[in-house]
Length: 549
Image 1 (tube, one colour):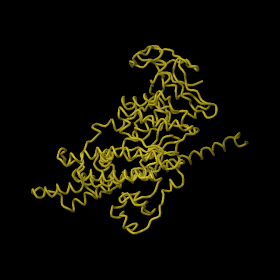
Image 2: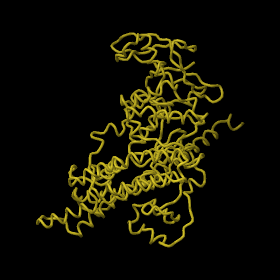
Image 3: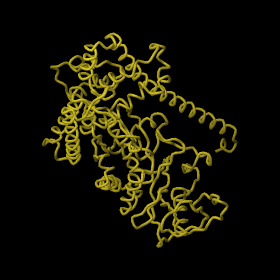
Image 4: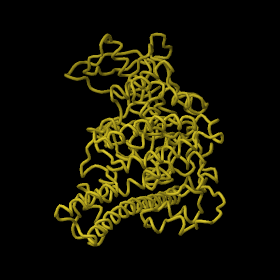
């Protein structure tokens, strides 16, 4: 008999009794099968439920009750052993269940899965965060340049299937688990291959390079100039007594964003070429030694990473691949099976088609298809997440999320160079037979037109630049020299270099702090496992029945 959770009715009212269909489990693997909640339901269960204090237009009392019961019961059905499935993401004030909550999700935030009601309508309830280990998924790795858009994609997958996603750092920090969807920035230095061998296929998210660079500014600001900077400097041993002025941060940020513009295309190449090792400044094939240095950019200066110094300008380099890809850590290979666009996903015309791409990928695998909601509900999934804004907060929820900063002509030219390089590469006969390569060309070509239009505005003076904008070293130096000519006071050259070193140290400490927390968590897990084994041995020694067996 499925277990349900009864709640007290609001305002002292007696809860109504409803008849709805509940989740059933297959005999072989305890796999929940999605069932349509409609009048033709065969399997029913009577239980008291609570009417939500929400006006659901056009629904009668019975339908409302059925809706709420279904939301609570869909993934709360018991398996043979209750302890195999006991985390249902209830409020922590009302439940002692141990929950996994991914990075960026506070304990009061609810993310929604979808229950299909028929007629293209759906209703939401929280997905399962603690995923049972006995289920055999075909797991999807969602990769993309650091930004909030991967979150939009994995929310689609969660809503389509009812299962939660997990971040690459959470795997490293909290340990391995059976989550079917994994979000990753790897091989970018903000990421880590933390999921081990838990992925089977790759989906790559493409976002406009301009918006990616703008969002990366926010990452850098959090490292070097946010209110939490005191915490980040705890281990700098008072190397820097004071924080440099905001203008110094802008100068450092501009240099970093220029590097990131190169890494944007390098990131795409890494996955499309199945983990081929390349230099992210020259895009040349590189050596494992150089690659390992590139993967830790906070430990080296740009000069120390120079290709000609580490590898040699005339050196003939044989192709090498990331061992994770070469050793088959992703069972289906590192090359993406699908490329999706976050911009198109949130477009009111093209968005539903993007959801359909994601849903078809999941439904096309026999290990995932049992969990994918009815096709008639896919538009509802898109509408609930994108139009109505349900689920976890995404980049769309940020105040003035789009185009908070302007870019100089130098920075826009750098972006266009990288886009055109990537478009040219994946338009060749070597690549254009792949649907993923054609999609990359399509998306980047659209982004190129937008950036070219902005560049035209900047050159024509229609877009005015300020000091806080992302100006690049040439424009910022031009302004510094102009200030000197006007007799204004500016930072000395020595002071400027010291300021840049300060922010380099902050970024290095940011990475080191993450790695320290991971190692500490790993030690705690190892100690816990030892304690559990010790307790089990003690129990066996003290249990005469166990000893006799």
